[in-house]
Length: 415
Image 1 (tube, rainbow, N blue to C red):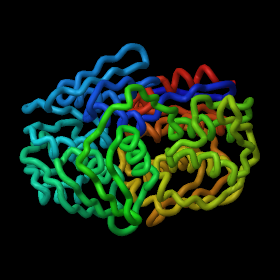
Image 2 (image 1 turned 90 degrees about the horizontal axis):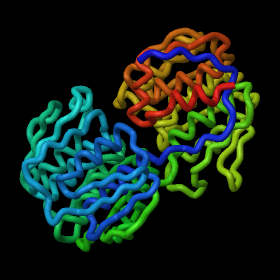
Image 3 (image 1 turned 90 degrees about the vertical axis):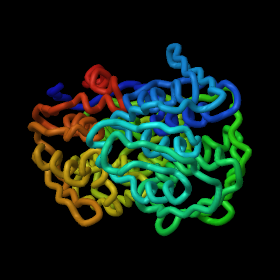
């Protein structure tokens, strides 16, 4: 689906959908825990639907009624299941260690692009720990054997999802384990989100020293009922659109200022750009503002880079984004695709070794390729607010991966 947008700005209240990252984690915990769990405010995207589909019938029975999920764990995992992860890297990378520790032969499948995304060094760690995995880099990928309790070490600069997967798995290993994360740890807030979810389900996990986790064998126990909070990552698109446009105030509801989500940093970053932004008892609000260039360290907020780059293109002066090299391993090479988006719309952006440099001054309009990347498609909609001419987004339906109603909602709030 291609879509053409033209808007001077957006305005009004938008209630932000549930956090994709948080919902992945709550569903995995609930499926592994003792006792039934009800998750409130569970609004699915394609990625979270993939996780629910993999868990349902494999380790739990999942029933959906409106925005409530009822998850009832099975007495034991079912062998022989085919777990289709679709295009969701979170699903695949976090459930692979879980499948390894449960010790029931299963097969993973998904899109061709997901099969090619790297799973090293997680692959080697699982094989050394007792799992038997088929050749990486292609689907189907079979998982046999069983992950043992013990001492594990994994690099922290590749993917926080590898670490999260091991944190989900090792409480189920039947003995105490130690997990050491070595080197520079990227995206630490995502690891903190995993720990927070596990602690809510009673996991015995202690960070005995920085990035060294002692994991007990108690397993997980359901808290009964839990709520999936709003998604700061998706809220960032609305907040940036409100800051760069000529519209009215944008108010984003269902966002927790005390969230463990790292992308709540969008408030701090937009304020550094010069935006008028704040929180009150209704949510997070932003007004159209005169913006200026800044430097952004993206090590802990990689998902915000495309929309922040668009914001920078609409600002005055130069913005430099650093420590974003892992973006080359996302749904697209997001360093290249983000620069291509800005340049196609009349701006100026160039890649660097670990990020990009954006020369602000405004955008004109034109046509962009989403590269089948949800964050590129939605960032292009934000760019349309800052452009004087229409913006055509090819394959805009890529946004369904994380935000199925984004474009209808966007058009309904245009001014």
